[in-house]
Image (cartoon, rainbow, N blue to C red; front, side):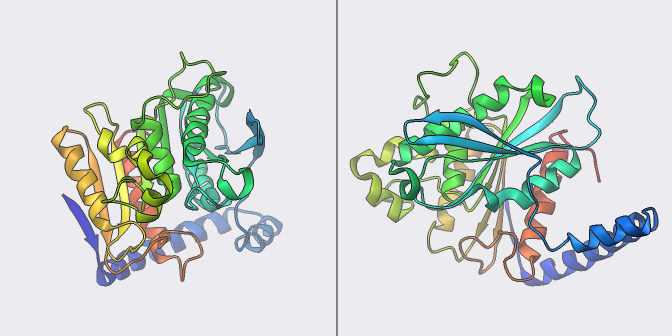
Length: 307
């Protein structure tokens, strides 16, 4: 089963969300000193910034940073879930800032959130295979450093959009492509996936541009063809009018997941095109709606308490 979200439903959701948000804001403002209120309001228009940014991997093409968003009031030894986001950009461009809003939101909800760099063609002159390798390195690094960030190593999700969604799904489904100098005893696979208009099929039946770039090797990175009984619970957001990555691809992904008795939720957004979910798109209705459903998905996994 998947859900198509039309404009009427989105409008109703927006009204309810607005009331809840307004109530929360009023309670928050009434409990804050006047100076703190002013500072908070001045910062609302700014894109969230990470609490820390550190090198998680050194490559021949340069160091890669991972940007960390930390929950408040975490007690030492308390194990929190984590999520690692990967940006979109066709394996060619893009930046981790794409998922800073998602990361800050989840950190405020109690999840340790990361937005990772990976090598891309425009900056590093590398191929999609390095993208997947770096995605695996990021998941492994987070799990290997779980105690440092008070993370439960068995509750680490991979998230991403477009080509970043491909990187995220590949960390779960594509075997091999691990960096040889890492501790391969540490698992690089996620325990859940949050995917926004992801590239899941790199063959001729999927993302055409990706297939052209990969050529004879397109099957090797086509994550949809490696779905198995161990694929973790997944939530998908996709526009039905996406001309870059066909909606049919994620419908087929969900069908194959169900065949393996895996949990897979698909939300199809009527008449929405590629990248519809991003923060800053229009009045942010789709951003807010997808984030709300992402939150509910993580609550259902037991990773978050109900808001």
